[in-house]
Image 1: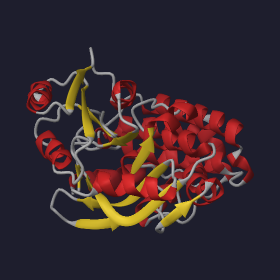
Image 2: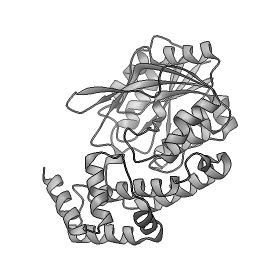
Image 3: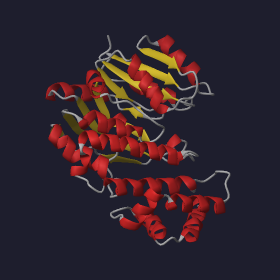
Image 4: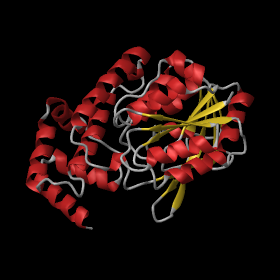
Length: 338
């Protein structure tokens, strides 16, 4: 039986999937299984998955009946996983050869429920930079809450952000099941899963060694226009309210609602002005103005001044607070042209 189950959602992944699979095959440990969850791809992804399964008995492939999204694909992987540990890998990313061995050893040496690592950010041009999770060490539930969960829950604006990347952790499967953590929605699903998983008593071991190669892929789903983004954001806020009632994050971050609303607003504005969509800029501006008039957004704009952001986000927030939407639109038109 495999010790580690690696879950890979696959959608339109034929170009990059071979490198992803090969990075698992090259691991310095062999007691893994690879679960490829094809989410009704229209390209050759399904055939690739089936070929890998035929070549290696450690590879298993599953097909969704229709395109259900990354959350349902990961949940299907959790349902099918046989390993004691769970790892996640995106189809356009790579493990370094020591990833699974290092994270497993971290868990076992420290009696931890999970292990986390730094990672490489890789641009399409090949530029690389390292992003750390936390300083190396072992963290108990109190330290996890203070140093990871509270910033992840309550501070979504001030740079550098605490990012909720699911793939830089190794999890114990029984701990996932006890926590009830599941994925939901097409965006920010990693963050909510981590808040649920680590919200109860847990122990985390961390290395500052980068073990994951994250391709900042311009074709990623998170970089495309999402027509129903505000519905996604509304559900995201509902889940955060539920998490706050359960874990009482408000005690440490009482302004989390306005902070998160501002973060959601900036994401929604960037989404509305995304390049390449068939929508006149006048109509985009009107949509942005309508979003800003929503009672929840209007309250945050009126009563909460975001701080500590990067230059571009700070400029957008400045123009929104002063209702300078025409200038905001002109700046995005110029950015899209560049």
